Length: 254
Ligand code: 13P
Image (cartoon, rainbow, N blue to C red; front, side):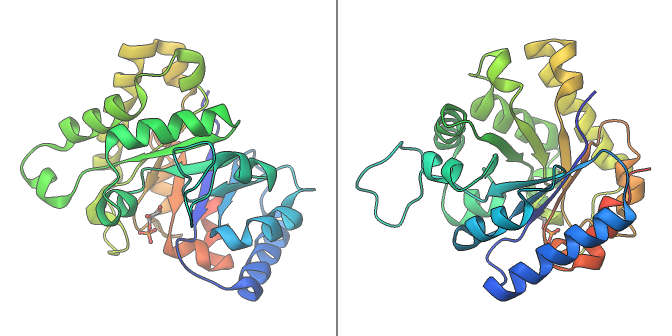
């Protein structure tokens, strides 16, 4: 069975004080209100990783993720952050291939494959993001685009290495727009992603792969999304910045 996960991607938001307060509220509310076995991941900006790690480290449910890493191990890359650095400040996950990185920073599948490799080498679990634009969806290319991003970014891995990945399906037209894919539409894509993984790595690995949905997930939409057979949780943007909303999304697992 795939691990259930709710991950909050803060993107380029919050400052140290508000970040610290948000974490403390989410920990307390979750401990009080949620007894299930979902894991919760926080993905703050680089400057807050150490602080957030300090706040969550005694709470088994909570894990730390970075939003990006550089594809080289180390060296003269001013302004960049290496996998080993992330590991050393307590990260266990790293988001790779978010559509904002693909769109604004021109990261392509070949580069993302390298980032996945360097993450794994450093003991970080990649949360690998895929998803089609509205244009691609309207052209009937949804499955094709997702297949390509998945296979070119991650299918060079061995089965053991692939088993470390979390996949996040984030339709680009749903991110930050307030428009969510319907649970049925999302389920259809998730099922096709799981099938691709089964075709490549076999049934056991496919069933054990966590496939998150992301794109305008809110407390009122999460229960129906998370009830879908192939949706194992969410990658949450805007709603992860409000403790009440984020905890209500965690509680959306039946
Ligand atoms: P929103 O939840 O704000 O749409 O963002 C989704 C996302 O991009 C998470 O990575």
